[in-house]
Length: 146
Image (cartoon, rainbow, N blue to C red; front, side, top):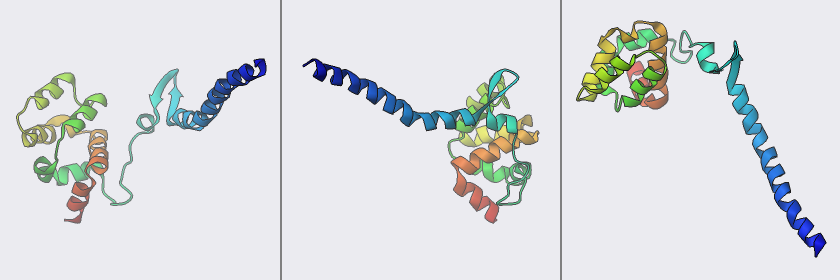
């Protein structure tokens, strides 16, 4: 019986070890996603910066946002996640974020964002363009086909 109990004690340890080995590649991938810079952990894509030009469409993000400003105002569905991202990336201040979110319609919110000074800098336009390509790719495709 003692040998049986010993075998039962080994099984949980073996399971824990197998689970740790299974998770090891995922943990390595997560470490690769982040990099250290001056002692702080920062997201790799923030440090690397943003693309200057979309290789698929050969268009600058700032050019896209400026050219299709009116269409974006009327066509972007549910822009709240975009505002959250812009707040997180420090494009919008807490005050500006609150002002935009307080507006009653999505069109008014997008109009305040696109007509205001918030997207004057190219990195801010890069964030918006990348967000739209990821979250509303058909809208971006339709606009680029015009």
